[in-house]
Structure formats: C-alpha cells, structure tokens
Image (tube, rainbow, N blue to C red; front, side, top):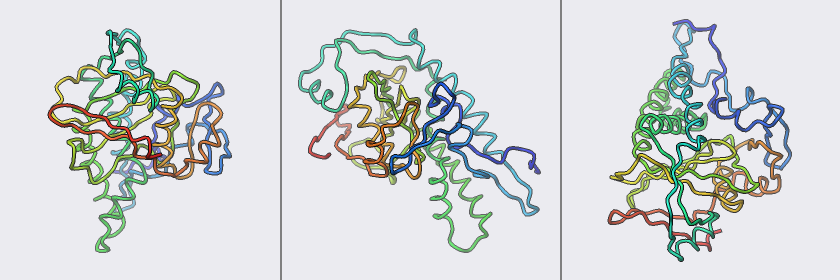
Length: 309
C-alpha cells in the first residue's frame, strides 16, 4: 500500500498530551542536561520520522500502526483529561489515618487530610487510560530500538527485523494493556508550586518483571504538569471502579520527578520556567529505590527507607 502522502513524522509523545505542557505562548520549555533551556512548539518535540513505518520491497510505505495509535489510542486522551479534571467525578469520605503510616506518607511528600478523595473510573475511562499508558511505554523510540536490537541476529535485512520488532511491540502493548487495565491506579495531584516534569526518556518500567512480592512492576506516569498516575498491578484486586487521589507537596512532586529525570536522554520538558539546578543534578540519574511495594496475604504494603537517598 502506497501511503507516501501520509505524514512521516510520528509523535511518540502525542500532542494531545504534550500541549498540556505549553505556557501562555503555546510553547514548552525544553531543558538540556547542563541546565540550559529553550522554548519549543509541541509540534516539534516527542517526534521522530518514519518511526512505525513499514517499508515494502517496492519502497512503498505502510503507516497503519501510526494510524492505529492516532485513532484508537490517542483520540480518547481528551476524554481522559476531561474526566480526571471534572470535580463531579470525585467523591470524598472521612478518614482517620494511622499515625505511623501518616508520618511515613508525609515524609515522602503526601499531604494527610481528615478525608480521602476518590475519582470514579468507569470501564471505558479505565480502558482508555490503560491503553494510553501501555502505548506510551512500548511506542517510545528507545523501547522500539531495544526490540530491533533483540531481534537482529544478522540473518535478516533491516526492514525485516524492524517488521518483526513492530509485531513484537504490538504484542507487548497488549500484554501491558491487560496488566495495567486490572491494576490499582493512584492519581497524584500537585498542591504546591512545583509541577510534574516530562522527559524524552518517556515512562519507565523495570524489565524483566519482578517475581517477588506479587507486584511485577510499577509505573509513574505524568499526564499533565498538574497530575500523574501511579500504576500498581496488584493481583486479584477487586475494586477497580475508582482511584484514590493523593495530594503531592513540592517534596512529593520532586520525588516523582526524579523517576522521570532518571530516563532523560537529551531533554526535559516543563510548562513553567524549569528548575534548572534540580534538572541538572538528577538528569539521567536513576531515582533512588527508597519506596517498595508488596502484596502479602491480600494486603498492599508500602515501605519507605529514607536512608536510600
């Protein structure tokens, strides 16, 4: 199929999301590892030419994967954000926190209130969020490059290897989608001056998956400068119709930003003038693993080791 008239630029960070990082002028701050920065149009960031294009023997181009991402995965993003920011979808219940657990939560940057807010997650919204997060992970250029290298044993032309890698990418998308769809979601909402950052390393996950403690992986995914989602695939978790909202202080936002900065390769993106010193200090540095999750006897347990800075 010859689709040479279709777009060649593939946004692995969809503009439906990156536009939330734009300032009043419609531009995004892009910071380098040395702390210097410039402003860019979201049209020109998170993009790579022919990323998911399949090339035929006659040099024809098939962009059906990009079309699928755009129409099936990215189109519901506006609906996702509308739902998450609609206060009518949030319910509040009284809460009497355990003093010790409250102390630990404060230490990692969460505000403790006398109430808990929950946001409803109808099945269509949960499915859309799950598909979007799974796609963000596997469609990233670094992830695809890893798959290409894995399948490149020297016996096939590069075009064939890429086709195999793209097929594998779609298989992994389905695997992550199913796992995320049945996972616990925690929505982090910033309440201070610090905003969530995004980096050109995308969202990260440890592979191979963990075998211990019943939680194979966890994902931190900034959705906008104001909210992020934590994904915890807890086995046999019955209540998936809502997500708890965790209010993150500046300290909490900084802790979560370190996760994203750990995967930064060339640029870090922000809506407001960037915290250059913070970015320079943590650019490309793996975040400290001082928070652990386990699922034992039907109970989610969170541990915090402040000594692991």
